[in-house]
Length: 344
Image (cartoon, one colour):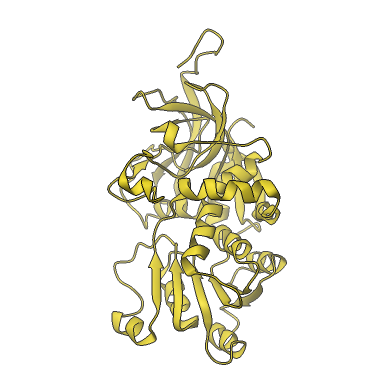
């Protein structure tokens, strides 16, 4: 809450809002206010467009009301309660007290509390004490914004895949999460599969062998280098049935398929019988980002993940968010990860 030493929040702010399919508007809207005692208001210093933002943008996911503020990746400073703390946030709120939180699973469906859109100058965060993470001094805002979703998701995907010494890993999709999955599994032999030149070039710079699925037989190429078996682990990070099917196809028998792509299809692209016959282990689910953030902070602080910020290709003012959504959706302008500054 505002104090005599802290100026009151403005009545309005600028934000990116959902207007319909492939229709984002940069608008002036009311500034959020505290609703519950556990809320805080965060002044957003940096936000980003995530691949999962494209699902409602293209209406592969439905149910978002017109004029809803979009986005969930942000860092900022607290403007109420613990005033001045520099914080980063996962993409869902969590209570920190329930059975699931005690297991480190901070995003089960029945307990999950969504955040208000963060591609704005201010955002209200519910359950703030158990959701927000104070950013250590030796971690930058750019690193913090990656931690809140895509870096945590990439490591969760690699951990779920059980990547181990001597294994061959196929990363299906070289968007931001896929590229960070390469960082997570960088000590293994990695095949990176995509069709966008800029993404494949970035994957190669991170140490992977890039394969363009539009120009080569990916399954044959991976089998050729694994004595005809296939990849030990397949990491699917796209959220499309074609990507999940390719992950299944490149996987060797008795391999592990780890999927963190946000899928909206009603059916699997491979049958239960096919999975049974191949003896695969299939793991899927939403990353418990709040739990993973705390695990990864020491790695970031040590410099072990210094390559992570290489994926950030664009930095723009929030006012250019509409154009940025178009470029990101169309994979144009070499855009891989775009950060937006609400105050520029």
